[in-house]
Length: 220
Image 1 (tube, one colour):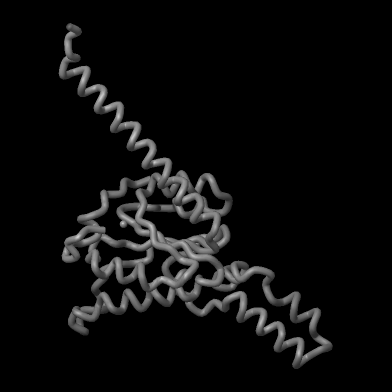
Image 2: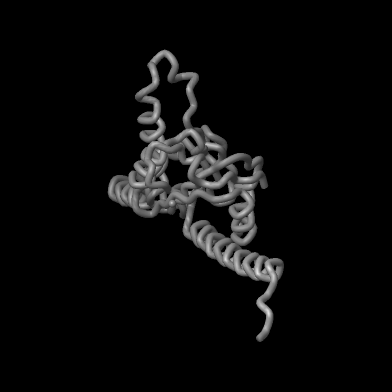
């Protein structure tokens, strides 16, 4: 009768299987991030380590159609950013744990509004006198069509018009000033994203913080 493999051999076999599973999981997440970048006009990161799972999931549900929230290790996001032109600045000074909001053109302003409402709600249990100095989350960085955005730049996107609003503006200009149609159309960006230049998963225990549930993200 053939001898059973020793513990060392069995352990090596288990490690081989685990590594294969980890690689497959990594590739699946990398493909997800790459697709999300390809479909997005703006992407911004936010800190989640002080946010409860309950609040985090509430924010996820509040995002409009055309937006998605993904928690990712920095290295994986960096690899995805290298695959899609225009997103390399997402790797700029990326540190600690980040969740990323991916939004297409039509959902861009609504996504920022959802974040601002979420940020405000997080501070409701905090005494008013302490809210100005309390940070339970923050925008870490953003990119819009190849341009890097800091915290203030991302927040200003709240006032960006949607494509439908731009079309309505053009229609109104055409109706009101027929002689200036060509000039008006040339002045309206072909894509909403160009206006950036003018702006210069969880755990069953909902009491946990998101940072306790998701793995630590290493620095890129």
